[in-house]
Image (cartoon, rainbow, N blue to C red):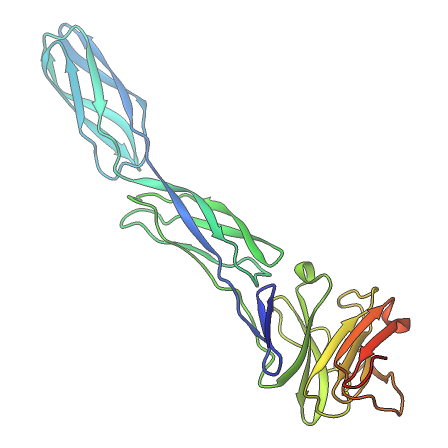
Length: 309
């Protein structure tokens, strides 16, 4: 038996582990803008050229073409960074009454946006976003935004330069720390899991059954830390919480095992209590629990192999 929720997969008897979906994205590449300029004609010759827009994305000095009713005018462009900042007339030509100037288009551009193609799952902190570098130029950078365990979008922090096509985008996989080599026999996502990212599990070690919990990418035993032992090594456990449950506040947790039915309050390695809710009479094994009301005084419906109580 296996189920998946919020990016986590659990085997009924086995180890709690993360089966995340890594987020994916594509980049939008925009070629730089073409520079523009105007020519001044005097005495039949082109005497000056003024840059009206420097453009962007120029990796090399572009060709400058002068057209008109005369002939022989030539000019060269000057680049500063990736833009045209000046044009120098190298030959004025003759016979011009007017002239137009054309500057060749740039061959490189920038990354203007990232588009999310899959938000993934299991993200509780923003993952690293890597944009492939151009052959020459500045590498674009971006940060990810996260909500509800998934990547929801990106903020460009540097559009980069020198790109000739849309680069590859890599989003880091969700971080996860495992409980360890324990036999996990039960698991519960908190009622507000999509905001607090809490997982509660029952595991067996040293002949007893314990609770542990983790929040997002934090280690296990951060909040329910090595709870007081429930007697015996359970082969299966079901976990439930009351209607008043709030993560990391000491709210009681109800656990039914193949040994007995318990109410546990534990939030520290050295503290907490275990209450056997059936007293001296064992009703093993508990197969399901239904809870109504606050955990400390809840109405509890539980089933065993032979009866519903």
